[in-house]
Image (tube, rainbow, N blue to C red; front, top):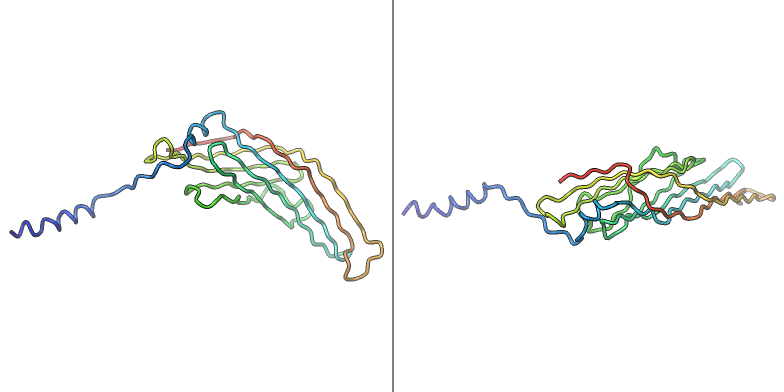
Length: 194
């Protein structure tokens, strides 16, 4: 009788002691794996560089540069939104800082994208990490890709100077605006781990 009453405790103890590995659900992105391994390339869409150099006095500058684009990956149903601003005059972007791209809420864990830009050379570098669990949810594939491309930017550079400047007014305003650039970019390196 004593053996029967302790039997449920033994079973509960054994159940709690055994490792349980949750099985991931298949992702809602069928074709992720195939797209990641079939003639893969990203689409850089609407790369925008613009800068503003405003002097409130001949010696006081408030200047910013901006770089923005969307990154499309054929294996993913969303775009990464990549934006950065810098006040490091004169070129603002020197390729030495990496900026985080925004990934939509609800994206699989571990999904990310970053980029660096060098205004002087036009070099754009970016990394992206994504996961595909459409073929085997128990062993999802984590992919990491890196690419580099030189952008030929067509920019207009205009400057206005207030010849009758007095304190409290804008002394000068220089604007640099480049035409949007969109292009496909093949990976420089790519790895996959299951």
